[in-house]
Amino acid sequence: MAIKQLTLFIQLFQEFADSYPYSSEGLNHRASYEKQRQQGRRNFEEITAAVKVGEDITESVRFKLLPHTNTPRNRQRGAWIHITESNNIDLTEWFQFWTNQGWEKQEYWSVIAREIYNFVNSCITDYHKFLLACKNFSKFPNSGEFQAGKMTPILNALKPDDFILINDRSSKVINYLSNTKYTEKLTEYPYINLTGHNLILELAEEMQKQNIPAMRDDDLFDMFCHWLVAVKKYNFPSENINSTDNIYETNQDEKINSTSSNKHLQKKFSNPDPAIPKSVFLESSNLQPEYTLTQCSQETNFPETKLAQWIRAIDRKKQAIFQGPPGIGKTFLAQKLAQHLIAGGDGFWELIQFHPAYTYEDFIQGIRPQSEDGKLTYPIVPGRFLKFCQKAALCQDTCVLIIDEINRANLSQVFGELMYLLEYRDAKISLAGSEELFSIPENVRIIGTMNTADRSIALVDHALRRRFAFINLSPNYEILRQYHKEIETNFSVEGLIKLLEAVNQEINDPNYQVGVSFFLRENIAFEIQDIWQMEIEPYLEEYFFAKPEKVDEFRWDKIQHRMS
Image (cartoon, rainbow, N blue to C red; front, side, top):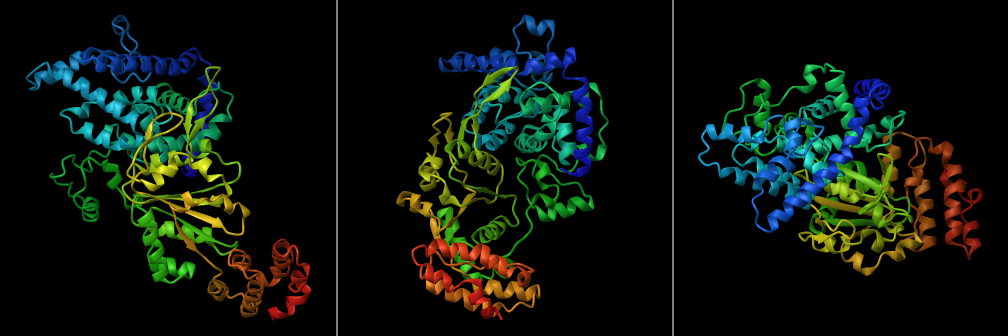
C-alpha cells in the first residue's frame, strides 16, 4: 500500500474507532456478523438436506441462501437478513422481470436456484476450483445479475477464513487503498477477494491498535467500509474507483475501444479470455518483470547450462532441494531461480523458514483460538502452505515457494498429507483437520535449501528424498572473485581463496566445507579479522572438536600473512 493511502487510512480509522463501534448502530452492526453467519450455515445445511432427497429448493435459495434487507416483509416470510443490504429487490420481482424479457418458462427459476446452490457448494468444497466456479457460473444466462454483493454473504458465512464480504462499500475501499479497479462482477471476485485478504493482513496491526471491541479483522474492516461509505459518505478520488467496463468488452469477439492505450494492450494481450477479469489485462505491471537465464547466470556466477539443468529438474519434479555446506549462497540462488521461473508471468514467489518448533498447524492448517463477541472460538485456520496455494490457484503462471532450512523441522510431521501429494501432484486428499479435499495447484513449484552441516539432516528420510530433486552445491570461488572485482575493494582475494581451499582440503568432507558468503563484504579489508576469529574459527573448533591441533593451524595469527 502506498504511504499516502496508509496515512489516510490511519486517520480515517481513528475517526471511525472514536465514533462508530460503541454507538447503538455500531453495536448492532458488530453483533450481526456472527449471528448472520450462524443463520447462513443453518440455512445451507437445510437446503443441502433438501437437495439430497430431491426436493425443489427454489424458494429456499430465494429466501434463505441469498441475503435480504431487514424489512417487515422479509422478516415475515423468514428471509435471511444480512447487513450487506445487497438484495433490495425481491427475487420474485427479479425473476418476473427476466420472464418479461423473453424467458419462456417460469420453471426456469428452479434451474437458476439449483445453479446458485451448485456454485456455492463448489466454492466451499474445493477452494482451488473457486476461480473456475466463478467462470462457469458467469456463463449461465443472465448470471451477470448475481454480483459479488449477492453471492459473497453465504460464502463468508460458510467459510469466513476463505471468503470476505464484497459489496459496493468494501469494493470501493479496497480499490482505493490497493489502487485497483475491480468491479463487483462475480468473475472478478476471486481477485478482489485475494486483494482484500492481503490488505486486511497488512492493516491488521493498525486496526488492532485502536480501543475497539474484539472481533475478526475482516469483520472489523467490513464495518469500517460501511461506516466510511454509508455513514461518513466519504468522497473517493474518481480516478481510483473507475469501473473497468469501458476498457474491455465482455465478448471476446467484440472490438476493444480504439484508444491508443487500448491498442497497446490489445497488442500485448491478444485474444484475452473473456472469463478472466478485465482488470488483469489493464497494465503490464500486473506481470512480473523479465529475468532471463543470462541475467541469472551473471548474478549467481553459475553457467547457463548448469542453471538450465536445475530449472529442468524443478519443472520435472515440481520440487527440488539445494543442499550444501553453510555459506555457499543456497538461499540467494533459490531466490534468483524463483525470480527466473516467475518472470514475465502473473505468478509470485514467497519464502518461509523452517525451525524445530515448526508444526503441521503452522504449515497446513490447525486450530487457532479467536475471540468473537466476547466468546472464545476455535476455528480451523489455514497455514502458510494452504494460503500460498490459495493465492497460487488464482494465477495462471508459475508460483514458487522457497522453504529455507527445510531440514530443521520434523518434515514427516510438518508435511502430513503433503507427502502423498508431493508424489502424486494430480491427486486430491482430505485434510486431517477440516476434511476438505485439497490438491497442490499445477503451477506451484517448491524449492528447499538444506544445510548439510546441520545434524538435523538425519531427519530427512528416504521417503522424502524420493519426492524431491536434490542438487548439490559446493563453494564457488568465482563468486568471490567477481564480487570483489565488481565493487573494486582492492582486496587480495586470491590469497583468501587459496586459504579457503587449504581449509576445505583439511576438512576433507564436502558436507562441511567453508563457503564464500562469509567474505562477500564491501569492507572486507577492515572486517576480515573479525570474520575469521568470530565466525570461521568457532566453526572449525566444532568440526575439529577432537583434534584441536588442526584448528591451531588456522588461527588468525597463523594465517593472516597468507592474505597478502
